[in-house]
Image 1 (cartoon, rainbow, N blue to C red):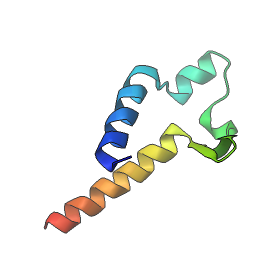
Image 2: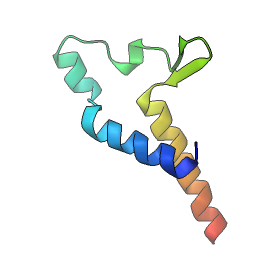
Image 3: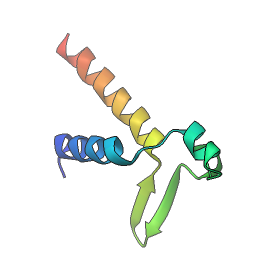
Image 4: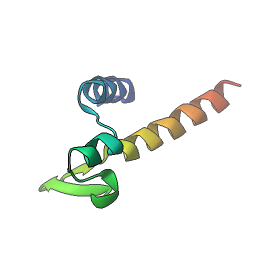
Length: 69
């Protein structure tokens, strides 16, 4: 999968599904603080929490901006 496609898909899904920790807490749901950063969802398939992906994408964008200078 190419980076641009992964970014586009992540932003689309998060735009539709991502909820804040405050909202989750208000709904008596687990927050990101109580969930592992990465889990093996299925054999060989690892999932990252959305906030971890946000941090990685921010770093990638920062590095890309430096390369363009």
